[in-house]
Length: 75
Image (cartoon, rainbow, N blue to C red; front, side, top):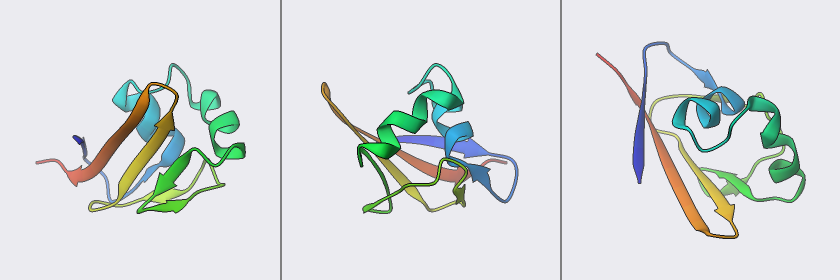
């Protein structure tokens, strides 16, 4: 699991995935959402602008395997 530090109270799901390097652009999240391949805290997510807070976990279900990201508050 990779941790992603944010300096704000929240971050949008598409921004987090772009920041993490998991996806090249925020728009690349749409097909994964449509296929149910993105989980937020273990639950399939459908909104690319979902607001994430420190403590949330995002799981990508990719053909190459799973990738997990934990949102943490940066200092």
